[in-house]
Image (tube, rainbow, N blue to C red; front, side, top):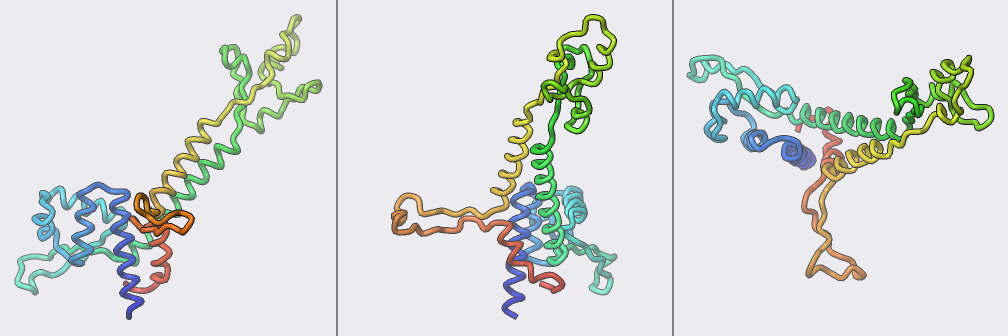
Length: 241
């Protein structure tokens, strides 16, 4: 019983943290209301959030498409109402699954971008820069023609153009040059670092007035990380919170 309570608490913390990390204030407030009251009609939420009904329904529809909230149609007639009413709630199991999947896909996308930046090589012919040829090649295409004297790659277009030329230019003028892609690599690495910081916990190591570092500082957890919370809700798979 205690374990289920802990899982529910961790799931609520995870969903709340995700809302604050990736969504605007209206969504954060709406998520907080649903986490607190569990099962609400949209017309009950509108006054609490000070949102117009149309805007509230638009936000709820967006969150349902995001997989963070769900609704259920309830026969309000049985409770003295006048119509079938839509009640909104958070399915913890489903929300946790969606969060885990999206974090995985985000990490996969960022890793692929970094790998692509590390492994991609672009070669340009000097004539490409001066617009006298279209010599722009990836690593595989660049290796098609190699200068037997220098071992460097040659522009295929220029090799064909100068094959029967009476006064061809020096091969240096159409030897391919490797383009520096450090800017692209740095951008991919920075994106990965920013996401890791955002998804990790934040710790205060004591600061002023803390214990001397040689004696060991008291660390205070200021913000629990999404990675940590995902680990804590892992046993939730297949179980109701």
